[in-house]
Image (cartoon, rainbow, N blue to C red; front, side):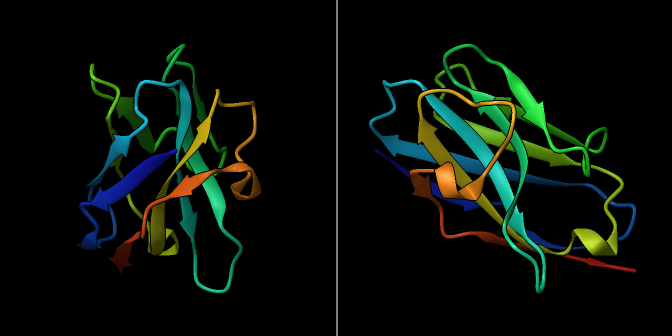
Length: 125
């Protein structure tokens, strides 16, 4: 398994951009689906974007497609999520997660093996 730690959360205005970073440690030599999830107030945790460390394949949830970009560094230990045109409804806690193997076409929190502690993101209007 890997251990994950997020950074980069904070408070911004609607329309602003924000970047999140997730650093993985531990068993980083294996292939993983590394992904970002978020939990909006009163809602179930939902997938935002994922990237397979082995193939580089990327998936985005339709709710954020076009507004977020996921990337992985060359060492495949640091994942980034760049978010633009943020809206108040994007406010929530954003989590980094990993699943040993690869990303399927869907992101389901129940499938993930490892989680970071989360980073709070607040978008004010």
